[in-house]
Length: 211
Image (cartoon, rainbow, N blue to C red; front, side):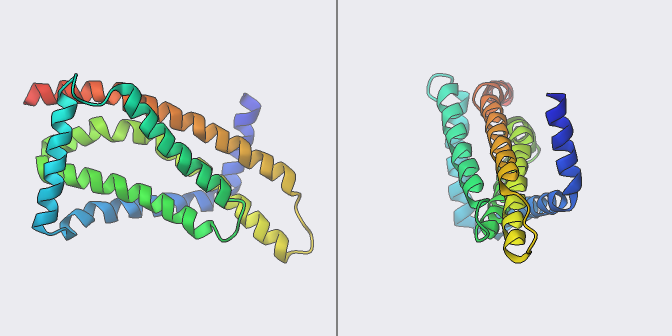
C-alpha cells in the first residue's frame, strides 16, 4: 500500500501543473455558479425557491423523504457514470474538452447550489451548505480530480506518441489509468455513503432545531 502511495505521489508531483490547472478550472466553475444565481430573473428564482422548500420539507420529514439507501444509489450511480465517461474519454484525444467541461460543471453545480441556498436562507443557507453539500464534496471532488487527471495524462500520452518518433509504452500507463479509475470509484462510493447516511442526519437535526 505504501509503495502504491509513493508511486501515486511521484506521479502527481511530475504532473503538478496539470493538476493545478484542474483546480483553477474547478474554482472558476464555483465562481461562475455562485454568480450565476444573480443572473436569474425573479420568476426563475421564485421557482427554484419553491423546489428548495419542497426539498427541505421532505428532508425534515423522516418518513416522507427519500431513504438513505435511495440517496446513496442515486448519488453513486451518477458518479459512476461520470467516472466511466471520463475514463473512456481519456483514451481519446478528442475527449479532452469534454473532461475539462465536466470538471468545470462540477464546480459550477456546487457554486450554484451554495449561492442559491445563501440567496434563499441567508446565513442559515450557508450553514446548510456546510452540512449538506461540503462533506461529500470534500470526498467526491478529489476523486473527480484523480480520474480527470489520469484521463488527461493518458490522452496527452496518446497525442505525444502520435507526433513523436520515440513512443512511450502505452500498456503500463493504461494499467495505471485503470487502477486510478477504480480507486476513484471507491472514493465516490465513500462520498455517496456520506451523502446518503450521514449528511441527512445532521441536516434533519439542523432543520428541526431552527424550524
